[in-house]
Amino acid sequence: MTRRVLTLLLAVLVVALGAAACGGDDDGNGNGDAGAGGGGGGNGAEITLAADPGGDLAFDQTSLTAAAGSVTITFTNESGVPHNVGIEGNGVDEISETITEGSTDLAVDLEPGEYTFYCGVGGHRAAGMEGTLTVQ
Image (cartoon, rainbow, N blue to C red):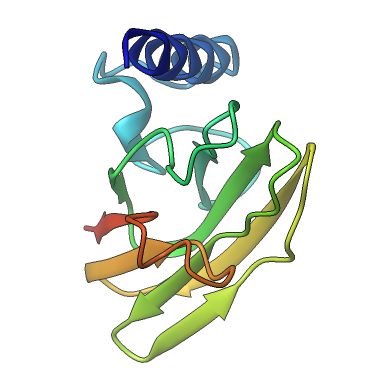
């Protein structure tokens, strides 16, 4: 159990450092607020999400936020266990390609509201691989 916790904390730290290295987070709240403010090249919100690098059926986050409009989720899966990311709610039902040891993007236009993000690989969502995306 301790190894899992340490692995999860390390994955969260890597994602947080990666988000900080990309810049644009002047509000100091980390990677939870995508698309608010910012400058240059369009109004799209960008969110990073990762599967557990050790192969557990879990995302590194269960709660995400983004500004309304074009939202791109960059999903990373370092493990050999296949995963994808889907978004559903408010008339939206989109899913990324299924990947192992790589990354993919899922771009959708979202209105304000709450959405569910999940892994659509058989049984993964039922095992708890889902979360809430709040669009403001």
